[in-house]
Length: 527
Image (cartoon, rainbow, N blue to C red; front, side, top):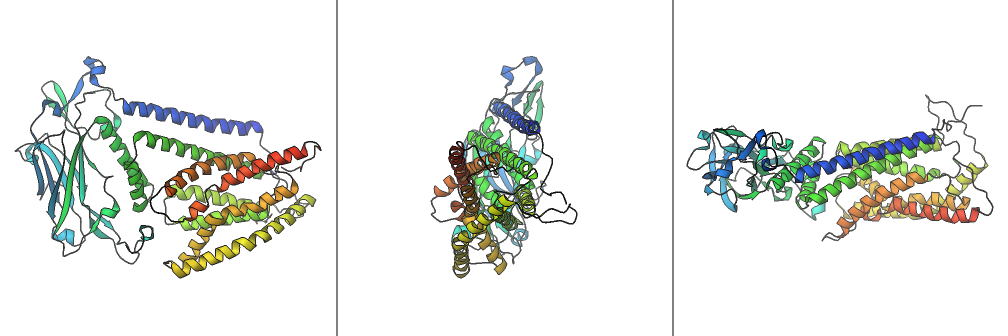
């Protein structure tokens, strides 16, 4: 007789405990490191607080020189062929203002080209090219994106795949500069500021030139204006604000976050939404969001680790719903196909790993023989036959509800909603069915638990970690969705509290069956 393919040597409880302690320790170290960085971020050490003999780096603005702010446009930011668009003389670094100008567009820009803005802060009445203490910063005034279809609601905007990206105008240029008179120490210069600081010598004094920054987070894609050949001038609003050292570092970190998202492959639409969230949030809320995200990743890792460990040790499939495992596997595969090509690797990789685990569980629960694996014994014992009978019964009842709803929803989507193709319609219908009715796929497992009067075949730790993870994400997403000014019914709203609802029902069944089983001392013996 062949050995069972479900039998694996059990790992000791000590190894599981060590892995959990290791992950918890990494999380605590990460939180301590984040708290230390946050403390250093909010409390930059001034030279007045340190030892004078180490030397100080003083602000060039402390002497209050007469300055001028000039904004030029050019095709290439190489200090050649600069066209003056705005001049502020005298320029007060501590002020706040806003100016509107009309910028002439070169022929190259109108022919689907680019245009840069170069902002200079230099001595008044002196050309910036002749001032050795000038500071400047360049930014694109144009962005190449595909034309969007603006018909219908905002949510229905789709990129046109048939048109090439065209040049769009950025109508706002937000300039910020650190106006705080702060003195750095030579040894305590923050690492995130070093790429912005330029040093100048004045006798024995060491000066740092003004810290200039162009805000790349303030403009949104909805504000962009398409450029065509007939456009000769376009409006540009130039705003300026003097900020503190703390706020300057805060904006630098936010722009670094957006840059990292682009490196991870996030699309401009996702980055645009994230920019709106970052701009409207304060530092403490962002830190809290980062900690919550880390906690979710740890819960997901622990759930995946315990799930794989528990399924590797299973010798019997008694009490396990085959249809629930199959439904979950198909659901996550459909979601993975839906996300493929539309989101970044940062999202695709965890979903893909979860899909691989679910497919492995399907092969295991149905005992499918693979050519490179040892053959399995497909004979079912009495408890597995009872489980299969209850599973079939529950799935039959459930199909009377799910199939008509999914088919009617797909027909409604095809008749009344705009679709890119029949394949897109089919995939979107499947994804909507998975999101909206995916929680019903757990019904066969709950029915089996009820019939067998036991939940010992389920892994409570996996349900707890998964329930905590989805509870946090669902509360955040549902709160933001239900609090929005636009009232629309999304499939994600219907899927809220899916895993946590299953976890709470599991706890109820566990408590109820424990009270019933205790006088008899008899339970279903499964792994």
